[in-house]
Image (cartoon, rainbow, N blue to C red):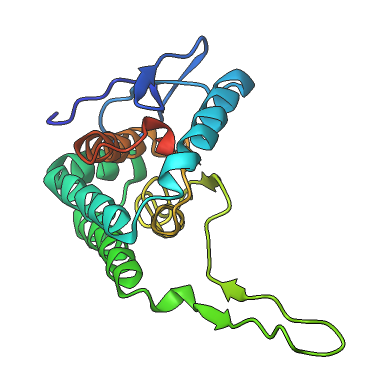
Length: 214
């Protein structure tokens, strides 16, 4: 076994144990113990995400792109661990897990490139018309802005591309929205290793730890 699990939740940069636990049911290989989420822990994660929003939501596109690319790097660095536990927990073949990991990091890098380009912002500026009748028009400016934290629910059949760091998480982080993920109990170990990668990226980029919780 090459992977190391804490068997804990990740909440705002801290690995937190739970009062209740459950055993994973892998297709093969060892079962592991994981904590059960509670309303109190969800509330803690949500409050941390809201706190993180007031800095992360106003970060630059360059800062967010760097963060997304670092997450992709950290996931790739754990490729062998993810494939090992992913095949055990899901029964999916190595080729499928490796391909899905490639899709996952590809999504992260794609969103990084997309926000750097800036085309999505759809900036608009209607200059003031003080002499317009019957009422003057004020100066109007439009640009897309993030509105707050996002909840992501992991999928049972896509342990990587539609789970902890999948497309939903990548899109939210790219937009400037902190994320709270409800990991799927069918592949909790796979989810934790991906969360470990995100945690390292958060710390390396100096981002508010509430930006991500699992």
